[in-house]
Amino acid sequence: MVEISIWSPTNKQYFWLSQTCNFFFKRLLCPPLVTCINGTCLNFYQYKRHLSTTSNSHTPNSTMAKNKELSKDTRNKIVDLHQARKTESAIGKQLGLKKSTVGAIIRKWKTYKTTDNLPRSEAPRKISPRGVKMITRTVSKNPRTTRGDLLNDLQRAGTKVTKPTISNTLRRQGLKSCSARRVPLLKPVHVQARLKFAREHLDDPEEDWENIIWIELFGKNSTRRVWRTKNAELHPKNTIHTVKHGGGNIMLWGCFSAKGPGQLIRVKERMNGAMYRDILSENLLPSALKMKRSWVFQHDNDPKHTARETKEWLRKKHFKVLEWPSQSPDLNPIENLWRELKVCVAQQQPQNITALEEICMEEWAKIPATVCENLVKTCRKRLTSVIANKGYITKY
Image: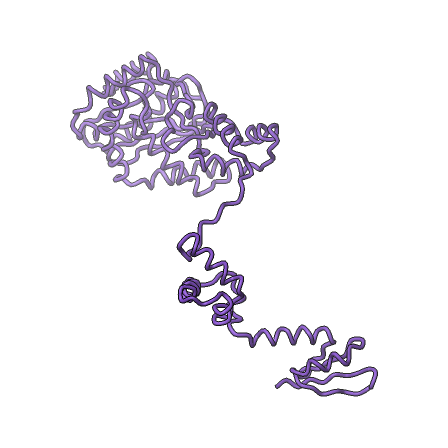
């Protein structure tokens, strides 16, 4: 029992009563009375709220009433009692539920023959089906369309949305924003040369590939993004074509073989034929010492590599050069090694050019020989892919 004392300003005295004496308030509806409950003072209105709270705490199944959703067992029990020919009122009293709640469960069971939760409808989309078709058609025609362009198109059509909404909408259509794949521009003569090379070397023994020193120049290229589906990265619309005479900021020269990584140097100036020959003279032979047997030199058909002076220099040095088809970086496993280096360097987050150079040298030296060996073993698979693609670019 809770002790309650009420101070009456009219009678200037305390009245003592129990919690159940609600009739007392009907006789004392004067301006707010001061009520003390176990030492805590409340006014009249606070006390009335206290009474309603404490009375609800003693109501059967009060915990269940607070829940927004009935348990599956309770719903099934309602159906069982209904099938036992009990009324909705009787079921509600027995389970401590409202008659309307019981009726809703029974009607649901009669309509759908289940008490499980039915699938709820999603929130309405901000972009109408017509708008979805419009932006999907736009990016299908031009995958390099930006979200800003799509935003303007929708606003002109009377739909105001945000860029993340556009991304989510296109993602539901199976389109994702990805970096455009850089692939060489292949002419018919390049396609035929690639096919010829693949067919001639497809049956070469694995030892021949292990004797090759692979070299390449590595530089920084800008990134373009495109909207495409999962397996459409090599579609011409989703790629950026590159040509050997296009120039660019070349940063590094490196080489490797199945025995491990070779020399890596930074190219600080625009490379020409004379500089290329100096690099070979100073760095190729030290790298070839790892081979401990006859080796073959590979480089692509860059104009600096095919210059008459370079060919004459290689002939005088008695270097055996692998004939290589133009526009075929996907056949050179060192391209994959560059990507590995790029990922490792990005994790270090260099703050300046000097730090970038140091990190590149450190990470290049850490590349295990097993990684290089496994890359060389993919040469036959690369040739098979070229033949399967009828000379066109492959996934490598």
